[in-house]
Structure formats: structure tokens, C-alpha cells
Length: 629
Image (cartoon, rainbow, N blue to C red; front, side, top):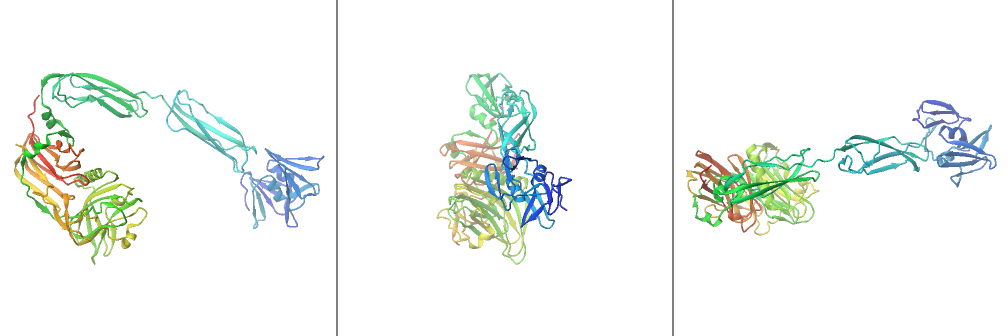
């Protein structure tokens, strides 16, 4: 037997029994069926559902009312009036032993009562209309005690589409005087008199922001020209939320005598700022000339100015090299993608280095993928050794730099190492991070990584619209043309090892790379077209520069010779990232890679031409100035 929810009224056919909640009631007359129409006692039903019932003798009408609803019924009439609208009923109202009986469907329609019928149990359930719902929000951001005027945005609705006639707030304040957590409750009442459940929101009120304090100290009040200035930032903030520091007048050293004012402005996350200034005196005594200071103290990865023409006069170390059998899969043509297709494809057996560098000029969002296929009748095992993915970004030189930085970091840490086994004939995604993000119009991605296989593997780079599955699309994709001079191809022996045994660093010297002279460009072939290919710039080639005996107090730097260059290197196991911006002035800048200490050292530099940057470049070695105090 069904049990009505609390408030709902359960009726039984041909019975006077009524149930509401967990209680049983008896109607004045049984629920009756006449000529196919179900009739019920108007008074019994209305009173159980919370409506008032009155008889108006002058009009011979029975009137039912509740919170904005009014329905009028007349004995022996087939019509009723609800809120002034006259409506035809399925049967005429009648009186049975002094009890006024009305068609049940007319009662529910007139009083806006939803109902359900269960034919199996011969029951009718008159449902109490759901209560209204109430909620509210306040503005985003911090609410500050004594300052913020709270903006309440209330929402109320009635499932019965009844008018909301009243609202009630508890704990609401326009401005909270003290910090703390304040519960605020909101309720509404509909035209039927039902109240919503209380909706409570805890409002966090914070103390007024205390601005940060800007402060710094110097280790001395007076400095010689070229003497390192040690500045300690001692700024504080109550929330430890200083978001910006702006210095003026701050330098690592000064090279003109006189007073210098150093200022610091700090700003917290709320936008409150504070400033502090301090004056130091630079005497007319010199500790280091500017060039000496730069060589000694410029941080690793940072630049200092040089005379770019002087590089040509430095001793040129004879560049002779051995190779390691890494086969380069260079997929950079077409660099600008204008259609879906296979970018490059070839079969490589053994160690392989993958270089991708492509730009979306097609318009729709695209994804680039790298696939590995096993053409052998036995399983093929791939050992992923390193991985460096960058982009999408509109800036090709940034993508090239970040790809190399992550590539060298993965070599240093071994974090990319994993194994992949391909079943005979199987094709799988390789380096899944390549296809993780879609390229919008104008975006570029760059990838450099290494993999070794125990048998021949077919490698495929391809581009499809972002919503397509690359494995499903592969069989129908055309081979794309590299667009004339844009390089792609397969190149053997793509690791060049320069192992130099004599002592270096006692006099200025340079190693000149990617010049197509002492360091010739690779020759290979286009695996799709079967034509010869030249790796212009030797992009993707890994240079391992091993200097077995570097003199004490030697400075090693990077100097671009072709203009703009954003790159990275692995120096004695540490990743060094550097930038040279401005095509005209780039050759007059040196990036610090390493300094030897008080003893002779062996130094290994791993470096590769960065995609998106200009070539050639030099590695410079020069003796450091003597340290003075």
C-alpha cells in the first residue's frame, strides 16, 4: 500500500478513507464515480489541504480560499469560477446526504493541486505544492570590516508559480563592523503561505588590509667604483603577499663617483604599496673596471656587453669531432601548416632524435602528433630517453628555447625515461605531450626528444584538426610538401663530440659552431620524396663539447653571431638558459655559462641550435680578472 509523503493526500476509490503523512482520516462521503467522473467531498478535500471553505447563501455558492486563490462552486452546475474565470467541469456538482460533491479534476484544477493516479492500487494522490526556494549571493572579493558595503543578490522561486509575498533575513548587515565569520539566513513565503527552507551563507569578514612595509639594507654605506653592492630586501607584509617589487637606481656595482639613491616600491595583492629609499656613496677609488666586474660577477645565464668585433680576433680552436649514431628525424617542413596531412615519415633503426617545429597558418585549431609503427613480424621495444615539449605559443624563438631547456632538464634528471612495446603491425602515439594542446591560428610548437629501438620503427609526424583522432585519420592523410626551401629529412650521426685535451682558458679562445665550414651542415635525405636534403643550421644536432683541461679562473660564455638567439645548454649537468634579443646588438652580448674555480677542471657543454633562433654561434673562453678586495 503506498504511503503518501508528508503533506500529500492519498484517496481511495469508492472509499471515505484518506491518508496524510502517517495519519488516516475519514471523508464526509466516499470517493464516488458517476458516469465515468470521480467525485469527492469538496469540504473534506479542501480542509485537509489547508484551504478555507465557506457557503454564501445569497449566491448559493461554496467558496474555497487560500493565499490568493479563490474558487466558487454551485450545486447542480457544470461550471466553477476560479479567480474570476468561469470554467466547464466534466460533470455537474451535486449533494449527497448533505455533502457537497464536486468532480475531482475540477477541484484540483481550480485549486492548482497536482495529482497522480495509481490504477493498480485504485488510489489518487493529491500533492501539496512544493515550497518555494530561496538563495542569495554576495559580491566576489574580500569583504573588509568597516569598509566594504555588502551587496546581496537574492533569488526566490515558486514551483507552483505563486507570487512571493514576503521575505525574511537574519544576520544581514550592510557593513560588518568587526572581522569574523557571520551566518546570514534568507527565507521567502509564497502566496499559499508556505515558507522556503532557510538558506544560510557564511560571510567571511577580514580585517582592513595593512599595507606592506618596504625596507632594504646594504652591507656598507660607501663603495668603491666596481665594488659589488650587496642589497638585502627586508620588506614585509602581514599576509606575506608582496606581489611586485620595483627597484630604481639599483645596480650590482657603480662605476661613477658620487651619491646614489636606491629606491624600492613593493605592492601587495590588494594593490597597497609602500616605498623606501636609501642613499649610498660611491668613492673615486676603483676596485674593478666595468668589464672586469662583468666577467667576475655577472650571474650564470645573464648577459654582459662586449665588443662583438673582438671575437673575430680570438684564437679559433680547431673543431674536429667524432659522432654518435643518433639518427635525426627533422620535421620542420612545412614550417607553416596550411592543410591536414603527414608532415614527415621515415623508418629508423636504433637511436633516434626527434625535432618538430611547426606553425598553424591554416586557421582552425590543429593538433600535431608523433606516431610510432612496428613494421616487423615480432614485437619492437622503444626506450624513451629524453623529452622537451614547448608551446603552443605565437613566438617561435620562445618555443625553441623552452623545448631545449626541458630537453636538457630531462637528460639531467632522467625523468623522461620509459619503455614502450609495439606489437607487430601496431601503431601508437609517441611522446603524447606533443598532441596534448591544440594550436590556434599563428601558434607554434617545438619538440626535441630521443628514443632508441631494438628494431626498425616507422616514425610519423602528422597534423589534423583538433577534434580528429590521429590513428583513425592516418590512412587517409596526404603527404605534405615541405614548401620548397623549408628543411625536413633524416640525417645520420646527429651527435657531434668535440673532445679537446690541451689546456684552454689561459688566453682568449673560441669554438665556432654551425658555420658550415669547420662545422659543416649535415646531408641526408627526404624520407617521403626520396630526394637529398641538407640540414641547414644543423638544427637538432646535439653538440657535446668536452674540454678536458680548463685553466683555473676561466670564464666560458655563449656569443651569438647571427643575431637574435634564445637558447639553453647543459653545462656540467646544470641547465643554463639565456637570451639575446635585438638582431643588431645581439653579437655584442655574452651569456655566462660557467666559471672554473681555483683549480683546473674538466667542463662538458651540451648544446643544440635552438629552433626559431639565428645562427651561427660561438662558445668563448677567456681568463678571469684577478680577484681583489
